[in-house]
Length: 403
Ligand code: PLP
Image 1 (cartoon, rainbow, N blue to C red):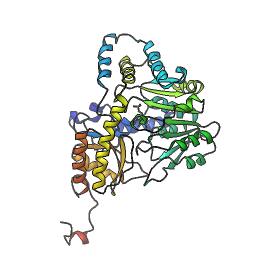
Image 2: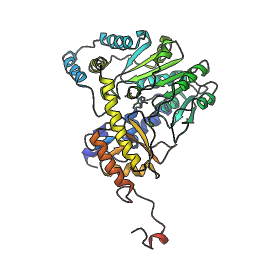
Image 3: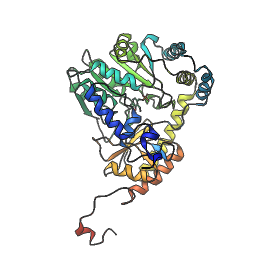
Image 4: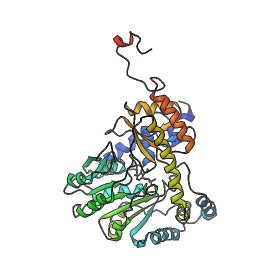
């Protein structure tokens, strides 16, 4: 391997490192915070330089921070020698005011991964399972393994149609769940769960079960938000992040929103480090851009729907996403398709064991999605170029039907 191809050197995180961390986490009951970035990296078919090729495998936002947020970062840099702790209260206050929340029910973190993990660590245990939808975002499962908690995976309802969480089945799955995780819209399918079902989860969950409602992608859709459950004092923690619509995955900022007594409990696991002032400046400025959410939601939806129209016209099946990612049926081992696409320098997202012939696609830029279409068509009609099909039985191959 050339030095420049060493994933650890370039990405700072190789697949080997991932699995070492993972093994260490369960063995030592201490854990790294695993995010989408790590999970995407762990399934990449081979080393991919993040500065080259097309990366539509980690649900990132290729637009990055908005112009005003970039300027806010530049403007705050000269003050980088200071902690500026007041900026955190200012950021939380801005968000709380916009959403009609008590600032005491909001905590800020560098991304939403930390509070996601802390919530699972706090409220699950060997006798208090984690209930999740399948396929769903895997990070809470890693946290549950550290807590020694059983994980109950409930298949999505109507997987060939709406692919929403099956809330009835999730409620029935355990009489004493520690955490029921609802990702709305769901990662990886991009599908939303109807408000009535989420209301039913809040109303009917066991008394001590915490509903962890992950709204990482909520800005990308019109689905009703869940912050009102926090205002009503329910056993609900909502997660928000600046990593998706706001394009700040690398800058890192997110919120946990919940009753102050619940936030106090999750805080026993961490979250006291001063936050980077660059991220706080960019986040607050992003919140103050009146049209940002609507404009970006529209841009991403247009590119997604154009891609869907093309997929439909070519008879490909996909989940009806309202977000920036969707699952795409390939009717063959998804890993082969990932490898075939990587041969075109296009990195698509990973496979979930429950749906091994589907791959997750992140909506990239217009041009990236045009390149995706071309390469995908090529890979799907090819028996070479990285697909590594199983060898034909000699008896068939010898007849040269498949020259
Ligand atoms: N929740 C979901 C569903 C995600 O997909 C991600 C990242 O992709 C996160 C949480 C965590 O993101 P971050 O820590 O960057 O806020």
